[in-house]
Image (tube, rainbow, N blue to C red; front, top):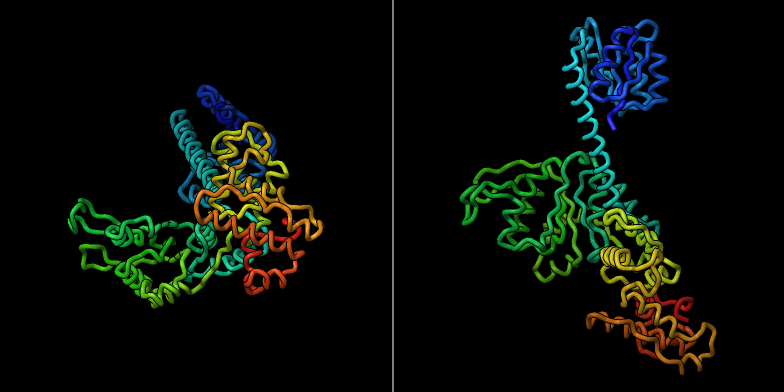
Length: 471
């Protein structure tokens, strides 16, 4: 469908001329003889573009332009003048017009102008949609106290230029936090450059980070800008920063101290203005003790530390995450949106999610594609997730006598794909069994299994064990 053009001009001959030009090219035409009439039509007809005469009796074109911009600043307006001057054109552009046409109006000039303006408008619309889609992709989902604490720290840190160190297990969403910091900083309009230090071979990471000159080493057939140069005036995200070699650590420290880089094969230093956000799932202080990480670099990176919690510490966010990933999967794969029945959602919420949010996303994508019905049921979930609910079903009723609990069969272990998963499942089942035998008396259970009470509490939190769920 061709775009609709609103022409606001007090001269009937001009309106008629433009109608013929536009309709011949297949455009929709809407005409108005005054500024007031044009504003009313703009609201009612929702045109794609406005052609607006500057000199009109009553409400002149400049006043109409300012009112149109106030009503809808995305609506493109092209001004028309019978005696235009440079100063008039400049004033119109400053007030929000996108182009300027002089009378008499040649049909070719009018059509080329419209095509260019509408093409630019379409590109802006696509950019807005792409930006919204990207923001949705990197949205941080959840309302738990643990997550709100992270977002509060992000809110305080983002407007500053301070270096941020994100700490947390693999898959907790450190990249999302880094992007949120960038998006809410003064550098939001500049580049966000991500580097996974663990994914780049040691012999290539210096070239990736700092660049190289042509011929500086075998295979260097072209000059290459490093990631720090690419991120100039923006943000660089050094993910898995603990995996850098000692030599690379020294060079990164220099960038942080001097704000300059030196390409491989060059003696010239290049100034860069970069904000650094680093992330790791390892204990850097322990690595420093073992001589594996530079203490001076640690202090440079650890200006604002933010710990991103694992999913087991924010289980109340799991239903929101499941729904979020279900919507994303349905949009990306053009699938009908499925809903999760209560027992399936309960199983998802109880599962430990060793891979954290990344594992949730993969599991939801799998069931959205593979589940046969419009409702995802427990039997549609991966076996390792179903196993958690199977263990609960095998447990005795809450309030059953201690002797009956003790004599009951131990919970059915969930399927385990790795030795570590089996050990975790076995430990959880053992703890639940002992707690039942001792009527959920924490102190007595800790004494029986010969472990400090504080350690038992940690295990209960780690495995999500509670009397309400496992009693």
